[in-house]
Length: 169
Ligand SMILES: [Zn+2]
Image (cartoon, rainbow, N blue to C red; front, top):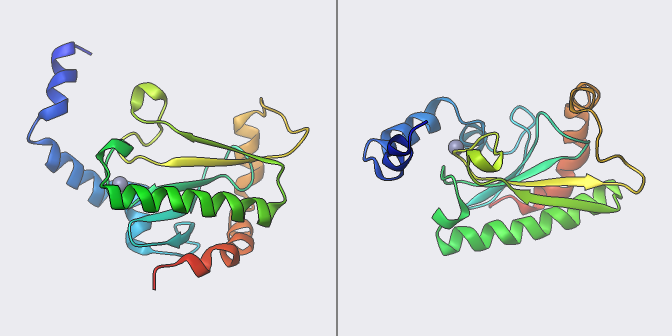
């Protein structure tokens, strides 16, 4: 990929059409936001500017993501109000995840941009991955997906009560 196309992408006026198109058609976070809390899109709670959604391809059981409403690719693009709500929801979600699962730790991370390894690079999100003493750092991802995915509906039903009081009224 040439430098020219990379730099052009930063300011190209047509990008807004790309963003709006992605929002309408392809982005699971925008789709989940529009649907609101529920098992279909694994949305655990939705506030004014941000929501908590379960990862459909989790690294481990209880792998959540805290996501702003805005379809932007970096937290630097969020308004102060949206950013503050996102961070408060991150704190609440961490506490509730630990309470619900009894995990011994939580890995928290944001992959901002394709080069940083973001899977859905155009809509920024914060991963929360619960950890237990003695679990492995190198769990085969395919095995983990297979085992955990079968229980997603069940896991949603278990976690949702811990988050539903956070829903925007
Ligand atoms: Zn989106």
